[in-house]
Image (tube, rainbow, N blue to C red; front, side, top):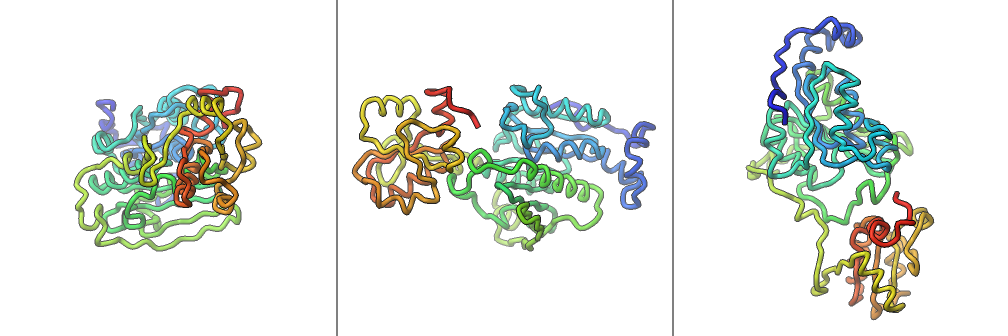
Length: 389
């Protein structure tokens, strides 16, 4: 973190800023005082991906004085259909650096602070301390719960957003009198219950829509105008273009904002991470590496290799000898399989296939393994001719 991240000190708008923000200044709800409030504001955006991209661009354009960006990842070609803060020329660069460069082009008056690291239980409070609010642009539950708990502990509202295929959600959590994320979802779900964008896919424009709404809510909170989504969860379905809200009540028994029994950040990686077993006892799932699978397939043809992805993914490429059984059909396919044979399942990165493996074990299969890292790991370690998607 830059030492002078919070030492702006300017209490006036420059001539350049007066022109730049002239349309804001014409709004009675904003005006010069509101624009100065934006200039003094400090917003931490965690994740410079699909949600973070539009939020970062609009927060910078609006004149938020200090914007922190937390992202440890690098720009991948598969990101570009939705992560609009990054250019094609940025592929291979750190997302934090790519975003910083873009925001400085958008508005050189804004201070942008990069954090090229994961947001964790060890560093979360240190990173977030000093910011007025936190915008959640993440795509995993472990970080989402950390963000919520950090927001409650620091008294900084959290602007929540999430996307899944064609649907999205937005809310404002952890305000003084409003609910927090745990009031709605008390504990993280099992790791393979809800796939992320890499597993389930996402309509490219959807994160742009949701991230822009998040930026709107952040600006409303900073300016103390309108009716922010406090105590309300906005649900967006782009297939029907329907927007609806449901009420979310503050839970007095919530361990974060209710009873306050959560007094420090706790890592949820262990809880949310996929279990890796070394022996198949008591229903545990064996993990097999791509190289181990390749050797196994060379040794014998007595293996049922099952691809649980969707047909559209199968057509992009698959492992020779596999049979396609989409996850939604695995239960009806079980009676056609031999529970005595060795069964190995795989998907794109390992989440859906792990869920399928659990179903097979529950049905009495004795020898079930999951391909660790899915077909993308197989591509990287065994067959680079397969496309990466």
